[in-house]
Amino acid sequence: MGPCFLSSQPPPHSHPFNHPPPCSPDVASLQRPDGSFAGDAWGEVDTRFSYCAVATAALLGRLEAVDVPAAVSYLAACRNFDGGFGARPGGESHAGQAFTCVAALAIAATVHPPAMGVVDRDLLAWWLAERQTPTGGLNGRPEKLPDVCYSWWCLSCLAILGRCHWVDGRALRAFILACQDEAGGGISDRPDDAADVYHTFFGIAGLGLLGGGDGGGEEVGIMHAIDATYALTGRALGRTAVGRRGSEAAEGV
Image (cartoon, rainbow, N blue to C red; front, side, top):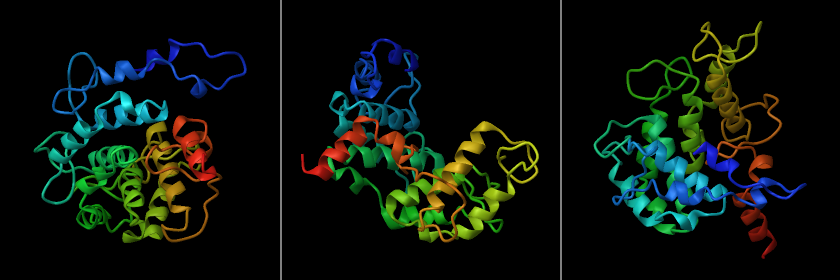
């Protein structure tokens, strides 16, 4: 989906989100009759792609380009007995898929209010809270090791559901900070492993959610709050169609 952002040249001194490129038809073309989305022309289906499609369309102000009710119906089919979500219907519950489904449903709910009714809030929040291990870190599935990336995947879902306080925020913060490479910089998956960009981003994003006061504890120097649905700072989100719509609503436009 990346090259579509090069297909339109905005006027000089204009922010590109004010003149969204014709990306939405390309995204919409990947939606299948059952409401799912393929990742590309080769047809692999995964709830990750449902989130990517819905989020892309929303950020560009083109959510009407996709069949939102059908997308919601497909995501509902991916929900499991434990409240979690899988990559496809019948797939094992996984914290990463919980984020992609819940965040996609939260976006869908802006134009299709019944969407969040798919989520059993308390059951899913219980399942996510159970991902916290004695180390303070979170894992993605039962009996797995903790990993910094789940500081985002789990906590973002809990933030959307209004239940960040269901995990021990101080213990999670301590786990993330213990994964820092104090000599070379960056954050790793677990203490004493090699730092990488992936875990650094999700570690900082998790700290951003914890820094909002709902996760229990002191500030850690995060300058801008992060949006749990889009993984963008409020400053960045404000430059998108989503941010403009929020500003207009606040002003009563």
